[in-house]
Image 1: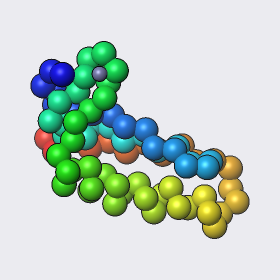
Image 2 (image 1 turned 90 degrees about the horizontal axis):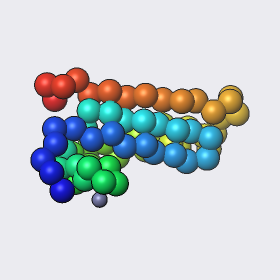
Image 3 (image 1 turned 135 degrees about the horizontal axis):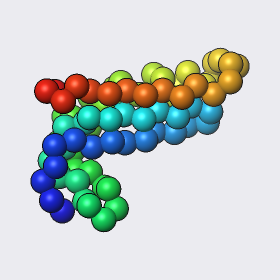
Image 4 (image 1 turned 45 degrees about the horizontal axis):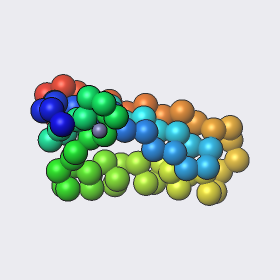
Amino acid sequence: MVADRTATQVYQRGRVTITVAGIPAVAVCPQCNNAVLEWDVAQQVEDLVQPLLRWTEKHTLPEPVVNVVFPASA
Ligand SMILES: [Zn+2]
């Protein structure tokens, strides 16, 4: 594990794929890209993506590709 500023995580459910970049991370493994997030940060990202992931349950449009980028100053 080495210190790193941000992490990128991909969330997928059904037909929805969400890539979240710029997540403030405690550390990111250079080997497997696994990120260590503070609990509060992870929770905030979950709150952001869960409604989008649930979108697929009630809608029939083709799969959306969602990219979320937090600015570097976050
Ligand atoms: Zn690793």
